[in-house]
Image (cartoon, rainbow, N blue to C red; front, top):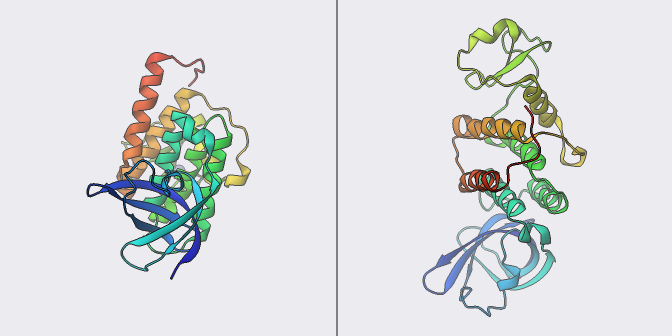
Length: 259
Ligand SMILES: [Zn+2]
């Protein structure tokens, strides 16, 4: 029986010579893999409804386990500037991989679907995708079972003065207790403040943020390290993003400098 549902395309993988497997985050059924016969041919009617990081309404056959099937599509959101801007596309692709990693397949999660959709809309509309990525990376940690304490020293509970982040203890240490972790991250107070701020923000509260490239770079390294060390994942999109920024830096040294 054909069902009507809404979904955002996560990725497409060629299957055999002419067919494809398409993973879609559906609003109604969670993330699911669809088998699309002949999708690799140029004029396949579903092609324009199966572009990664676009949202559509579909008609298809849903199977609780295994592969599902698509019959028709109707476009809802193409997020145009994500499709045309390589930086936005790289950020959105990374976020889609992170979202995909954070849930089980075939389990409806409408809250996460809304978060994903809203994030894509923000990446699409704004100049800089880095703030939304940082916000989501911090927000999704708890879905991987990681709860970091950015506010209070893990030894004495103090929230005053100089702080640093300890990966081993999964939280911050105050100046008196810095020696508890000889391998602490040596973050600046500005970097700590930004992490504290972003760990509390919701998507709808994200306003204009003025953060220098160097600060982003360091925070980014720390967040990726948290995902490697504490969550245990390294996503393909992460290496791609790093490469993209490296090349951009070489071609066009940034105007924004700072600590
Ligand atoms: Zn302390």
